[in-house]
Image (tube, rainbow, N blue to C red; front, side, top):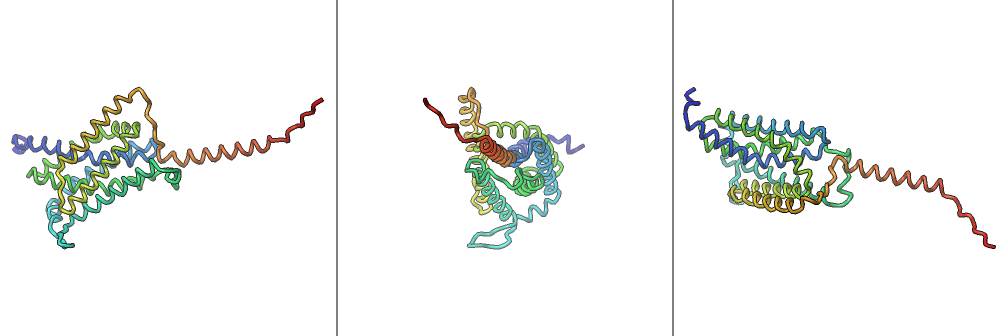
Length: 276
């Protein structure tokens, strides 16, 4: 009760909640892109599980706060650069984001060889595994920031739970909006490239102020919203979802094959024209 009656507790809770929501934007964008490759009936479930994993990871890290703080201690030195456990996680996560975003852009925009997948869709398990992997990176960055702003672990956990609740509400509409507007999807993938580069820079002690990154993202979104408003009377061109690409390709091949068979069976030599 003493904790609840302290005004500083509420100030810290509100501040941390807002901060967690802002830091969670990266997580929502990544989850929206990945779950967009699943069949429609699985997407909402995957988003809920992905954000649930993010919340669980953050709470687990907060409860092992001494271990998290220990991750900032240097492990070894490479070319005069000290690297800690946190640095290695950030560098690995950043490189993964760079590679994943690049592959997604290529798969969405390039030729037919990129439009064919082995099973016609991304598997539910592999999608959750990728979400969980990046949750570690985003959660670590978020928790380390939270530790520097509050002293009470319970306040941090409460802020995480509230922030994840807000994300759960926003994730569905955001995912639908991204999928409905191809230019916004490309913008979201470019954000992942920007975030990945920022994570690698942080891991190498080349700190890029978060304000610069979020300002660039915000300005890009503002310009894109103006473009969408100008083009609102024209229906957007929908990119084919990954799980439909092979199905469409196979359907076209089957139709072409049946059409050729039908034309071959119906074909007959032309009757000669007899003129008087």
